[in-house]
Length: 136
Image (cartoon, rainbow, N blue to C red; front, top):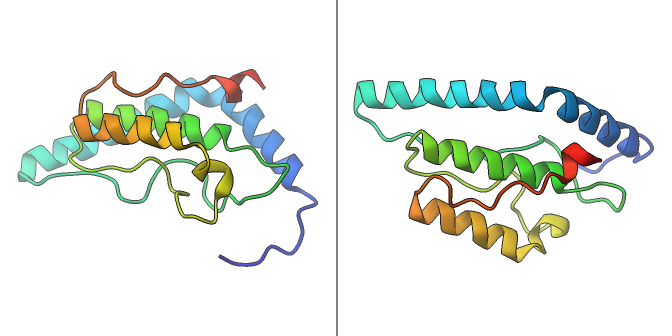
């Protein structure tokens, strides 16, 4: 992790992301669904397993008292469900599952829910998105 110079714009950045997610959510999910369908088709065509080891959600998010993990959780829920829908053989819950991210790591039930769904490999097993991000 790199040290951040200032947190003065954290709230502004988060609010901008929330506004964007509220207005573009359906389109972003449709785009991700389409992208995963292309990967799945390529895997079938070449007879190779496909999956995701990098995760879902914002890049360079950090642990900070003014920042929320709701968007990251919802993105993980949605994308794990899409990955299962498209038959990915391996995937993960998010791109920020390292121990320094205490806000996400403390939600053990969330991790267990998604990990159970991934292990079962069955669409519809992921806990429904909380809706917190879209309602903020």
